[in-house]
Image (cartoon, rainbow, N blue to C red; front, side):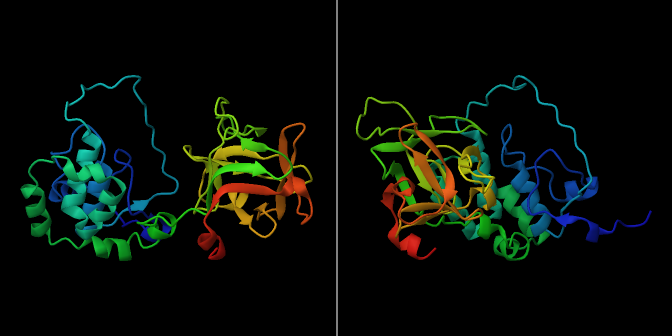
Length: 296
């Protein structure tokens, strides 16, 4: 049987835990899955790291199809070990990630105190197989990962309420969902008894999102009074790429070159051509990271 032409496939640093094919003998040569992992979580990282660091390669097959049926209930009892997913991640990090495990602990400090059991067998396996370092993995396999997911996230550009310069009204997404429009309402800072969602972040991804949700301001048209809707944050900029112009206090949508505008009386927001003297295009973030904005 001829060997497949791997130039047609895409190298993949990490794969989903249940969606792969592997040579059986190589799987067991790698020790299979770490039998210290509980229930689920972490196995996809463990096997992926082992494959790359211990002499294998992993590829996405563009035309492959995988069926995955979810049960309506968990077919297993809770193992009673508390945060078993965090425990699994710590096991993987302690065996395979070397000094890079510190980045995990920076994001999840409570992982340091989790009891992970005996790791001797896993560390002996790694030594016996002569596996490469995690630094090698990051530099040669996942070399572009820090561009999208830096180990230490850069600071956000601005956060807090977004108040209109045309009146004491604030942008309020009211916890709406994907592809829904939103507008203005009375500012909660002025009346704490009001409900709504008025805390936002102009994130280091250069998108605008509610502070506690992964959904972003999205604009798909450059026409006058184009709508602004919510859409799941994708990190690809495009329709979700925004910049805060501190000189004019404009929220500029860079793809269309338009500015966020509003009708205070009707509590509406929309996009329009930018105008330096238009008060309805003035927006004031509660907190602005001036240094980050200047280093845009």
